[in-house]
Length: 618
Ligand SMILES: Nc1nc2c(ncn2[C@@H]2O[C@H](COP(=O)(O)OP(=O)(O)OP(=O)(O)O)[C@@H](O)[C@H]2O)c(=O)[nH]1
Ligand SMILES: [Mg+2]
Image 1 (cartoon, rainbow, N blue to C red):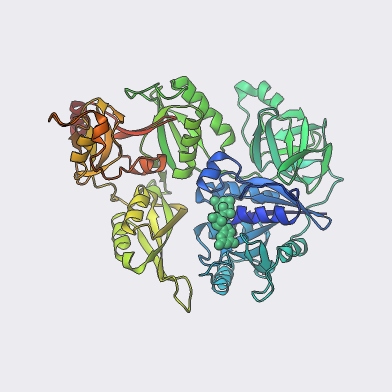
Image 2 (spheres, rainbow, N blue to C red):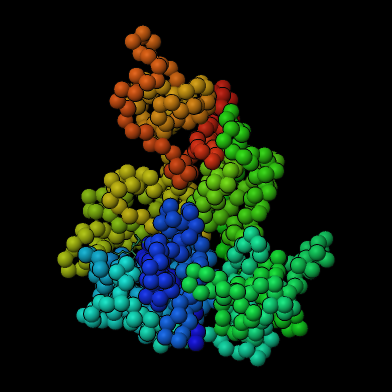
């Protein structure tokens, strides 16, 4: 007997931790097997950042049942992926943090799950938190369900209170907190069994794609009806229109045979000979397969309703690296290599778009947010690519009367009272509109003393705001945002007000020079760093750019080479990361991304070129 569920929630509410415990308590691991924490976050970027980027399938056995589980990413940039995943399950575990309550992404995934008619089980997680207020959160979730017009059966959703980290779940807060048995039981009784029509012709919607170096593309989805076995003929009904020029080749790609078939068991993919309706499988054999297409019995080519892929909202230009250091640190640097890699990405990263531009050295890459694009950059630099990127820009659209529309974000901010003023002011200049403000946290005790503010802000206005927010609130504030929709063009929005420090010359940075500059702003580099003319080495404390020389040592004779230099008391530099760089970068700048460095530079490296360019603009 089978159940298919997805675990959905706002970022960090504990989905992957819960999967860990479900695997453990269902006896998936050998008694003495060492299993790392958040084992489903298996790729290196996920482990480093502590977030889930790609959804993943697993399954557990519990009392004669098999439960297929899909762990989904919680970050808003990957919301589209969650939406697609929901098409292959029959119920969801909706996790909500027992302190934070429903957040923007909770609302989004809940709306999608309810809209598909899925039966939710609400898991109020992190009930072990000292500041947990599970009853308040319980009420907030019900309010959310009503607001989203849940059906009666959905409003009757069972609630369990849990600590994924401690490995227990209870139906009533007073119940003994021993294990996840109450959760498993609720899943078996409340999630309906999947469709079970094995007699009809085979049909399956492709909800995700995986890649295997040996097998190529793997189509993953739930078998809607019928049965399938290795060697069976299959037909791909793609959403992509067939281009006439390639017709023959493409048609060939759309017919094939099942080469290999897998189900999921614990952390493994298990090869099987055949599978039937309701089962979630990975199927190899169709190279041209893409998400949203239907795989059918060739004799009965009936498509399932496709899956809409979300439209991108921001773009950046990927440019061949032409800095003076180009080619030093990366293995792949040419325009051809960059182009090939970007177009390869489009095949598996469905929400991504890549376009050529007038210049052979520049490609416009569009996606769902800064994290979506940032992860691509990070992945590429680890593979040995070297390139430059422009400042991200939003993608506008035309409204019904030809007016310009731009993307808006819903922003939730939790801050201690002392910082309310500065946040309101900053978001005001960024054209934010406050929708709501209330005390957050515990109702009675007011333990947390945080204030929650809900804003609607043009996505443009948020570029670069996260750093400022963290500084303004001394790291005590929390900020989450997700795409809300397109709205009227907001006019001018405030952005970076300060200028930068630009290197005048090539050379190596010297402590003495940096020491002299540190009162003028915040430096991005330490001593002993190779620099070039036109490279940006710091943030100027004021508006306007400052030309600086970071290579100039002290003239007096008692200063020896770099070694002695280090005695100089330098304030800590603020080294650039991909994220901070992307947030900070200005329109007339580029960020150089290589396997070993992130550098900021002016597009025009020579001062006189910059002057000419700014005259042209101004
Ligand atoms: N106190 C407490 N912390 C928890 C609990 N469950 C998870 N956490 C912590 O919350 C953080 C996020 O946990 P994850 O399991 O990665 O959350 P997630 O929902 O999978 O996050 P994304 O996949 O990035 O959306 C980790 O530091 C966990 O240790 C819990 O029940 N209690
Ligand atoms: Mg996760």
